[in-house]
Picture 1 (cartoon, rainbow, N blue to C red):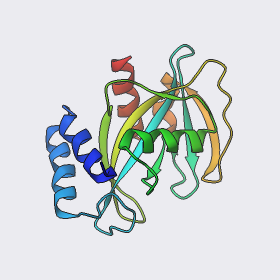
Picture 2 (picture 1 turned 120 degrees about the vertical axis):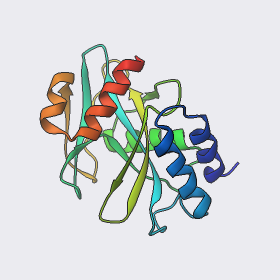
Picture 3 (picture 1 turned 135 degrees about the horizontal axis):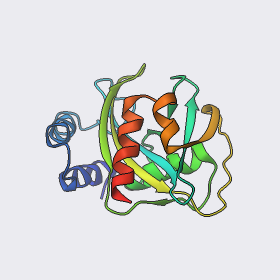
Length: 171
């Protein structure tokens, strides 16, 4: 199965945000290349909020290009076999943490936002950090930092706050 086909199945199985979910499916229906950065009308991206529920905190990256505190994530790559695998790859690469595990149950949220390259149709997951996880900053970040749940609203935008709330509701 192709990554495109997997994304369609993931989106069809996602039960939340009906209008936005349909917009994602319509976008893919109109753009056979809608999984890739080269699609100038927008593309599917995959992200994951790295969370440590035992310590009540999340790991955010100060994104080098956007200069905002965000969850880990980004563009799908040809080697990604599934959308969850893309989210997990991004989270692992950007956090430096091995052994992350996606929270069961599929995507936590969808968030469509405009970036310098195009519209991102982000499919958002949550990744549980293993006990004793030690982060390592990547080339894509200016900084990487753990924030207590109640600190996230003061450093990140509403999309990250909504992702954290949805993640906590699923825990």
